[in-house]
Amino acid sequence: MGILVIFVILMSLPSGIICDIGCKNHFEREGMRCEKISFNDYACKQLSRERVDVVIPYGSSNLESKRNFIPQSITVSIAVNNTVLWTNLDDAPKTITSDTGLFNSPLLKPNQTWAFVFEKEGNYGYHSEPSPWLKGEVNVVPLDPNFHKGEGIELLVFANFDVNYHLMRETDSVGYIGKISIIDPKTISVTLRDYPEKNPESSKVNVILHLGDKIIGGCGDIGVPATRIYYKTLEKIETENTPYVEFREDWFTTNGKPCNFEELVKEYR
Image (cartoon, rainbow, N blue to C red):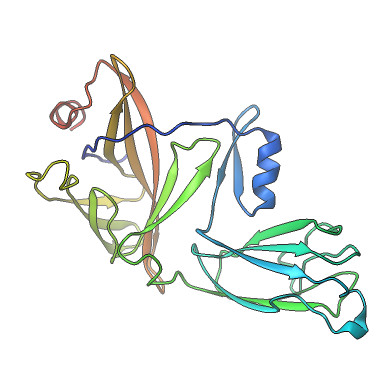
């Protein structure tokens, strides 16, 4: 385990759900990525903040109609809106098939949908079977440096609403993380400070984090004597184009530990 840096924020406790195979299939159709966490439980990660919709219009099975994907050409930004959802509004089955073999949907019946998440930059052409005259393209660009600038980007994990991901550029701050500076592909510098409205007397703390290191970032009392403690794990550092880091936020429960900054510092420092 990496370094534990203590910085405690009082938080309300979110509710959790269990995601079985049924909702896993639903979330994957929406373009999320699901991982098995126990016998029939899955955690499904939302890989982009927003989604782009493309439709196959009615009548496009007729070559002479000259109807094509709507919109036919789209540009998406990694982590922002790089999930693309296609809906078949025609009266005949269609596929969404990559020109280079990167992806190929099942045969979509009328009104069925299919999603794909584009995770690498580039231009991706695709077509449809059995109507190969239907052609489209997706242009994938780096993470938008101005999207929610200053706030970071939050991505959810379903099956456990107590887990989410925070993507932060060097222009962003999230809660007690005041600023990050990327040093190299495995190391960042982080400035930490308690929420000013909760603890105006708190001082700034500067720490160095490596991939896999954790920051204790919040706590909540869930009934005497239990306390739920939240922490962020540094999981990814991207240094190309728009540099950013990704934190995974989880929690654990302790007994007999009050939700108090000073007490937690004594215990976990």
